[in-house]
Length: 275
Image 1 (cartoon, rainbow, N blue to C red):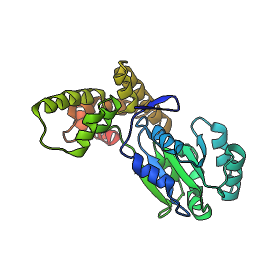
Image 2 (cartoon, one colour; image 1 turned 45 degrees about the vertical axis):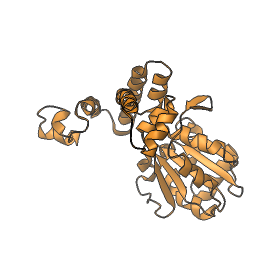
Image 3 (cartoon, rainbow, N blue to C red; image 1 turned 135 degrees about the vertical axis):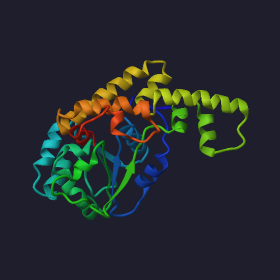
């Protein structure tokens, strides 16, 4: 585990691919879309990879920087968008620079400019991340086929969990699929896997658990944030269904998903809402 921007950071298996993309000297690079649910570690992963790139990094978070988001949404064309980036972030596409925009789906207009980032910027590296990037290309904005590539960040795998709690040797063993497994090591791995199933794979909860803190409180806060996001995007009408879905997942994980595991004997209307 290392420190990154003052926060604990655990190694991820996606790091080599992300670092290779950033280091690549390819001209007119595709725009990299880093997707994944909230709290799976997208921002920390990108920031860790970017920190050692040697590039001039310009970054922004459109959920926090509402003024920049407003300016981008007010742009009429790509040239005006470039001016906003130059004035607000000191970004220049003519340099070996890297533009990282987090929570990029919060902008209504940014998706319109993605194709031009590849076509017009010869040397720049662009990374856009967010928890609901499908909203980046909303309404009449066409998905820029052939101009983007996608990386999906998931919660910790078991080996990443082992790295995060300081069991690097066993993490390497799991990734290497080395056989045979001695009875003592097998017993130890089963013990740690029980902890993994209890804690889950969200980095904030795992790192809290590793530090001896109450990871359940962290998970409760994340669940509340998910519910808030759902209401903000879709409205309050189905928030109770989302809460019921969260409750049902743990009880029926590994089994076929059925609407009756969410609400017993749902009527036709409730079935539609669950779907």
